[in-house]
Image (cartoon, rainbow, N blue to C red):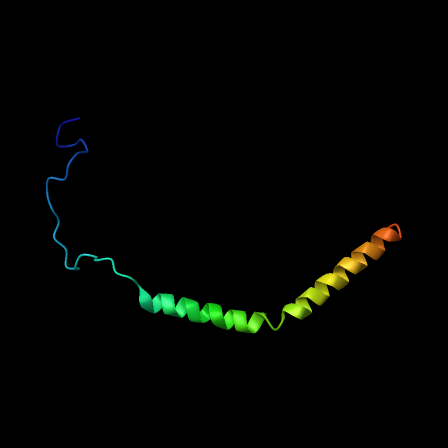
Length: 73
């Protein structure tokens, strides 16, 4: 391998049309994310008692099925 073929430091800089990236806080997306989170919480919290009731009924049915032997033959 010759010196020109080996990887090394960049010998030629490429010009670009796009400006360089300057990092900044993305407040617009943060606000949108928080708004979506609050809407989801507002929608899901009222449904929580129903979810707990379904879970409790499922656990009760599992308990009763195990108590009777759990056979379905």
